[in-house]
Amino acid sequence: MDWNRRQTLRDKVQGGENIMRTQTTKSGIPMPTTFALLAALTLSAPPLTPPAAAQCPGLFRLDWVGTNGVPGGEALDEPTRFDIALNASGELGMASWLHVPSDIDPTDAVVTVGPFGEGDGLVNIVDPRGIGAMNGRMGGVYEEACLSIDATATGGWVYCGRFSFDVSGEYCANFDPFGGEHNRCVYGPRDNYGSWVTVLDHRGRHQYTKLFAGDGDLFARAAARVPDGYVFSGFIDGTVDLDPGPGEAWFTSIDESRDAFLLRLDAQANYEWAVAIGNWRQDEGEQLAVDFDGNLYWLGRFSQTVDFDPGPGVDEHTSISGSDMFISKYTSDGAYQWTRTVNTNQTHSGTTLDFYDNKVLVAGGFSDRVDFDPTAGVDERRSAGEGDAYLSMWTSGGDYLWTRTWGGADGFDAAKAVFNPAGDIIVSGGFTGNVDFDPGAGMDVRSSSVGLNAFITKYSNAGEYQWTQTFGPPDSAWVYRMAYHKPTDELWLDGLFMGTVDFDPGPGEAMRTSVGERDLFLMKMRCAGGGCAELTGHSATGRSSKASATVTTTLPSGKAAVRLCDDAGNTIATKKKTITADGSASVTFKRLRRGMYWLTVTQLKDADGRKVCRGEFLERRVEVR
Image: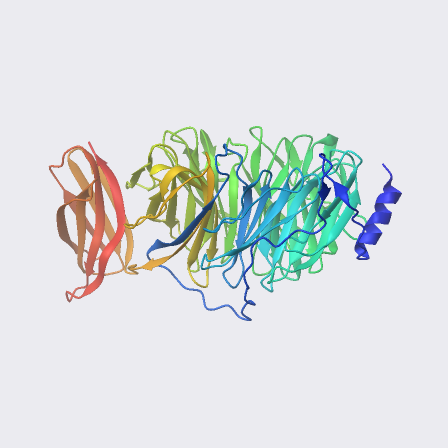
């Protein structure tokens, strides 16, 4: 490889020289050097100070839903979305891969284009009202993909992704997705992968792009904003240079296998520090979270015995199965703090990572028998089927707090989990068959339709089950990504669906039918209100000919009303019980036939008979046998 030539090209790129030449595709058609703005709207500047965070005590209601796909296309033809993020103004950024002609607009507008080469990085910036989106592509003749996105401190966007070198070992592309020309070139091994970082301002205008390459593969798959800069993670395979500037920061993976890397850049994407950890098998960094002091929490997977301390110290962990999960903490200047590891018996066991008030949240899937406590204690759980969902909490110091698990015989997964402004937890994903969403002694059984259905579940900060909403019938839908706009309590969900689906989890209806075998959906939900702060819990169970409910409140006395309905929604009875001194009230409905029933708290009264809460709260679905 001609590294002198590569360095010369790099110097030109750093100097801002446009060195992208006219290129042709494999068919000989010239590749445009500018990418058109496919659809546009005026994006407002971000507020100097975001509004105070709201708190939603109740359920969510659908605000709007948009879908897009490939008319008549088969599964996997649709654009592949990898990540979504929200800025301070409530606009949603999306990172995707476009590889066949498709409708790329995530709202109800139709904008059909194809990639310029074998695949393009696809960028969408969506108006929070759902009335339009900016849609653009970045790339060249060969293959690019946007893999991750986060909002910048000024309301713009930072993207990262990967690209492939052509047969000559050259890579050139335009990284301005919205009409300008910001071309970058670099040289590397033929048929290998490199990575890039691009920053756009709050109006989608290109600020800068930095490229990473070397003798091996480099995948940057996770991006996050930190104070005065950005942090990225992924894996390296071989020898790569993690400094995108004129300097060098070479890292070599062990025995030509994948090693996980963590990279810190400043606000202008200049190199600050990097670490790489691994052994001779596959080790990858997958998720990032940042606390208020700029400390980094790093989630990934590893195999064999790995020393997670990149400094002179030693902190070795050995995987139990082929691939175990790790969580590591670093300070903002790269000082190693701690690592915790868990064997979940799944290749990709951790799908989400979030931070709130000195607590670290992890969610994902597991199978068989797993001890979720990585310390000297034991907290062993067993999956009900091929795979169940889990939700785990640690302190910022690495101390284990708790885990909740739930699932069914047909397989289950938690795709994403986030903290809301109050520190409670919202979890989403997909499920099949019958699933009891209450991980405690109570029951809340939900049933999917023909295939997968999507769910939204809420837990308190202490891990107490609150409620579940589902959508998907008559066919299939499942959530892959979720973003929560805390100032306005707005929830965004992104995923896939097949056939005809009702996207409204409430009493309304929002039917959409896929144009291909499988389409994408994007939906925004608002707080429905109607929550009851005095109602802290509802545990329901079904037994032989009986259904029981225990309501917990903050009231020292008063009365609680619980309504019983059959599975069709017909009211069978409503009972009122006295709230005891410990704040609880228990209700039992007897002489019931076999089947599914709904138990819903409808009213709380204080000791003076005043209605504290009135509505429908914390509904539970139980089975009577």
